[in-house]
Image (cartoon, rainbow, N blue to C red; front, side, top):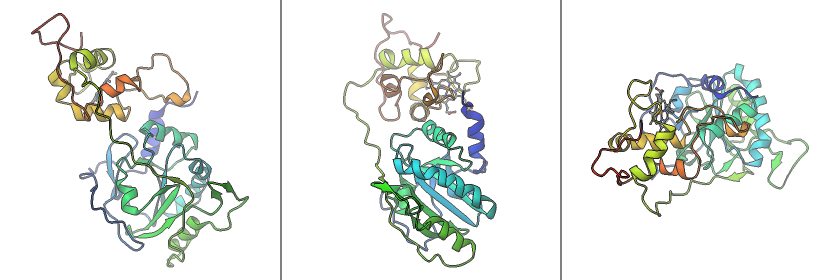
Length: 316
Ligand code: HEC
């Protein structure tokens, strides 16, 4: 069996120094697309644990290379081994590689599974609202953006010219990304700063459907919590708060929505790509997870079955 994720997640996180807190997420509207030569200091993303991070937390490097990926673009799959090799070759020379996931349907666990599949030693982060991609003018995966030690954008474009959507050359005739990094490390201006990218167009996540009946706490939510959450989220446990009443639940609605979407709760670290596990406590991705998307749609209270007027509790 493959190793469980937690140990690996810690490894993946080593590139991201802990301790500093990121400020508010990057702006959505009115984002100006960075030009070559611009200093871009406001990039933000989520790390593999779902925590907000800023690019500055990656630390200071001779070069930082962000490569935008999804877990299912065929061209990303083809270049991933090249990125792993590039990381191994350049890490000691002060180059920090980071994979930035922009897959609309990719969860944090999908992202972690991809890192494990390719044994990538560099961090993977999630650009959930595509703020990074938008800021850097990235439209396809796999596309790279290279920054100098001052976070000045010096290259944007393909990894090399080998992989095409329509087919692959036996060998690349230009290794554009590596050439840009070499020039940067040699203190020279990057000679070709922008290259076209053959790849998968990045798609924003669709707006959430809010049609259909509004779920009620008593009928739709409390039974799921009783089965999946309240064994921990009740008094005298390690869980930080109770999820036993309508007020408990609506009072933590935003956070519940986030941990469910990121698959951080219920705690369970095996990824379904590695087979089915017994006792898997994960929510079913259809109804259960949808009902707990409370940041997107608040439940109404509803009625406790057979006990009018009683303050119903989700747990024992
Ligand atoms: C096995 C015990 C356990 C189960 C089951 C569980 N939780 Fe948690 N939960 C915890 C613990 C422990 C923490 C505190 C984590 C920490 O401090 O990092 C937590 C934290 C949280 C947080 C705060 C945000 C965070 O990530 O720390 C939310 C929201 C949450 N849980 C929601 C849920 C929901 C919703 C369910 C059911 C779908 C659930 N939990 C199931 C133990 C559990």
